[in-house]
Length: 398
Ligand code: SF4
Ligand code: SF4
Image 1 (cartoon, rainbow, N blue to C red):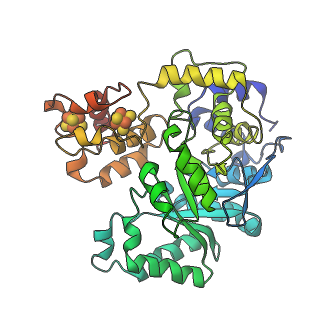
Image 2 (cartoon, helix red, strand yellow):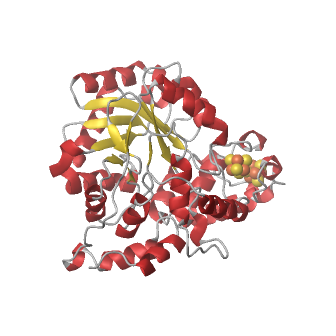
């Protein structure tokens, strides 16, 4: 297959964040049909130190939450991407397996992060949930990744650091480190306002993964700087601010790629070590890698301003949480809206439904239709929260 053409490139700019239709188009021309793209002249131009770990990671790295074939991972590696972020839960463990399959022969040239989710301190102390259980889950990840070690093992989606008080958990991660199965530890979070602050007084986190984009995260910039100055590696996720460019009216630019502008915006913060856009097609790999080391320019900022104008009342800033205390029923508003975003904008229908199924019943928006909508009044961005929640429930509920 020829290199991704100008036509396809523009198509990828105007597609959704995961560019499902384009991914299918490229896949049809790919290894399945015994052909693969010629290697693009585009490549990673910048590798940054990841905190004080000693690792040097590509500024544009790989979020492996969704992709359709391991060859896309390999293509990213071929273009210079060397940091791959996965999780036990991504694609119901298949993400780890795909990374193992695609990259085992270059294991010593790449860095892998994987993540494990533990619901709460109470539950981890519950029946049979001890250090052995934690070790078993990490070892199962190693097996799927076809490696003896992961560079960074993260606790997945921490709302605060209370989980780290658990002695069994601490002991498990210490043992895994001593055995060489883990090099560094850290966590991912959707609540960086709280967790980054707490991380300043804690030694567990050597790398942190958090939401940072042009619509969400300005308020945590001083904290990002502080954790980075402490030597903690900083990795940005959800860098496309919902990736709604494919869904917004008249949001088409022939000149500037919105994903590239959004990536450049994130990396213009010198305290961010790398970001992990999801690359689910060859086109995504080329488009995102092309943003490596490129400075943010005026045209990027104009496009970003237009995106913000159109998306402002649609995009739930997951980490803001301003509405949560207003709900008399304790609905997990930002989580439900985030799962809705995974379903509709990321096209991760099955995963989104799975996450929603795992949410406790009393956190679902089951009473919203009889409520006057206190959450809506509390939302500083004017989102139609109640309607959005009811809609999310409709699409996510099995
Ligand atoms: S509509 Fe009412 S019940 Fe539903 S989330 Fe908002 S405040 Fe809570
Ligand atoms: S609905 Fe509004 S207030 Fe609630 S988390 Fe989202 S952006 Fe923040």
